[in-house]
Length: 377
Image (cartoon, rainbow, N blue to C red):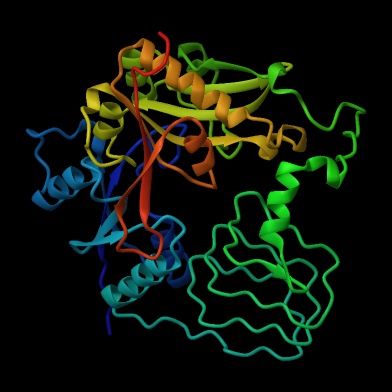
């Protein structure tokens, strides 16, 4: 059967790559093209430039309106059918991949269900759904998992030389040798003195830093022109012409906050007027309040990602408190925040209320809101 060239349409924004405008083929489509050698017809649309009077197809206009009002998230059209990108969602990736094979009339390869007596080297599973993964009589040098959802993980007989579970990995039921590890972690948080102290850093500096030594400041035009994004995970150069950040500066006076210690970055918080995020067609919350008077917090990185000495000393809280003060001073009505990587407790500590706006999925979509005007100007 002769393969057909499917049409992929993407609504681009400034948020997917954080540092600059981005409108490129979704990773799932790029991977499909690499694996099959097939090509697609790519049609990009720039959300920032699309208004009610713009000449764009009806399905693009309708979908962008849904994204802008918070009822839809990012994704792409394949031959006119919408596929949600799904934040770290293996099911969404599998569905899109199967649709691409169907659209080109090609057949996906069937991987072997069982490997025996093989020196496999490195194996990577990304955007996959796995009914059951069995490791039996194996020697595994390193097993790494990130941004994945597990129903149950059972480790039976054997030996693990080191087991490291990150701060942002939530485990609802965690037991070891019959003990509830979650309760042990809570005890450690309340009584850290019972568990000793981490050793000093290699350079001899203290293993922890006092929060009073951390400064937090708003990010302005000079930071935008510097070309370097303060977020640890953003590798791309920061574009000084970033329309989203320039608009945030014009409306709010800043595009986020940075925490610093001795001149080194140790935290970042994105803070944007919600009306700017809406125009960009990127991740927003539903419209319960006036977008013109709502500040939106969408991304935060702090603590151990910048060094163990910064873990759990209050950097995230200090950045959020700075955003609350500035938004109140500028007469904003409220602040809304999209949680990720266990930032829920930070927002709750800072007086935010949890709001569930879609509980139809395995992982309900939630955000946090705080009404302003209740602190000193």
